[in-house]
Length: 113
Length: 115
Image (spheres, helix red, strand yellow):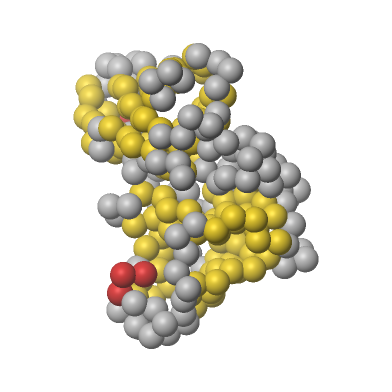
């Protein structure tokens, strides 16, 4: 089955700097890659996703890139703000398959003011 | 409010006991997924239901079982509880037909503590 590795497990950045979180997946059939943000005491919330027919997607300060050949994808957050502090999870699955999302173990991002 | 409702929010129980966690999916969503979140294991998939039928199973222990009712709410039953079962249990729902993944909407979770 699919296996998703996520790095780093913790990340501290100064406010205004960029943060990058990287994930690799094992199943070449995976074609849907969402990112979730989990704030303290809450459930994970979808922040951006990308499908395998797209190499990059942006939404304001957040961008995700996908390299299908290398089987890795990354989350980029620019101009970080204290409210970006949270745990971020990457995930992968096969759309139009019967496979649930497989999550990475998460990255705890701390933005220092 | 995500639209996915989980009850109770917190649960403390003794080893050997049985508990039931409840989830109401977002309106219109037919798929319900259960995940277990422990400190060092991230989000582990347990089981998925679509419109009342089991669709996929993860590393769910035999002591655990689930079902989805005609009104689409789901219950996760955990029995013969052990200390290691202490975790956050999340329910998520999706608008997909069960074969497609559009992104999940998660509830706020049930924190289970086994003492």
